[in-house]
Length: 411
Image (tube, rainbow, N blue to C red; front, side, top):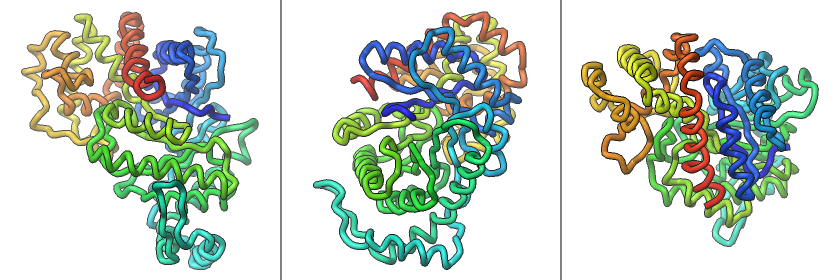
């Protein structure tokens, strides 16, 4: 069973597991237990040429090296029915991504049956002193029209895993990689459908309002997000009580790394509702590797080479992440300018320090999606990681603990 707090740490190249666990051990020393979940998607494995079995081996090795005393998981991140089978042996956490099935209509009879089965939701539902939802039959039917087929697809993926997997596993249902956020009322109806499908979801990842771009801060109205997030927490609590979903069901925030402006309001809401959270921070690990490499001449040369190649291959690298990046190409320094930078200039541009006048969120987002180029460097890149292991380890540990875990879970 997944703990109350969990974090999707991820690791593009399988080298930073010990550094990530060092941060989680610090949290444990501070009295906060956070379950690590190494997540890597089919897309990332395909880009890098890695396998789920390699991710499992890297996670297991880190756990042994640091004597991690608590549960941990390996996530088949954003899997579909087409891709899930290759993850089943190595993984014990499955993020069922059904965003592509939103707005595809289920059979009319299935929609009618769903509406009839959940007429008890129609009316005014007071979830908390502050949250009253007015659910009409029209809203119920509209949500079923929009989301029921997607939840049915999640059920198909879940049953595929269940029929092949030996031993327990965690299920997350993800609908975040879409353009339109789900309202709290829609989330309530989605959770009713998840329960109907018999999916024992322990986390659910809705699409929130605002933009959750890769590796940079939240773009949107923080007050609006705070209200929405608290309402979603109330929905999850209601769903657990009324739909017989797992008691530890919690919200999952995808692309949650570096959403520094949201951490205070998320922390406040978690305390208010005594709620759990799953946060995915995978991509920052790879960026901390690059920042560490900037400290050495040979490493800096690699970082510059990756960046210059990324400029030339912008469309190829950006297209798969179009919904979660927002890069102004006019704000990207060209290769000639980059060639003049020293390691500190490069690190300052890349490191997510909003108080630094040299921080460049456009450069950071481009490098965030450019790990394919590092993978193509093969052993040259991996050797650099091993050669500069100590400074990279410290970067990864410090970033995860001080900039994510402390403000969000410790305070």
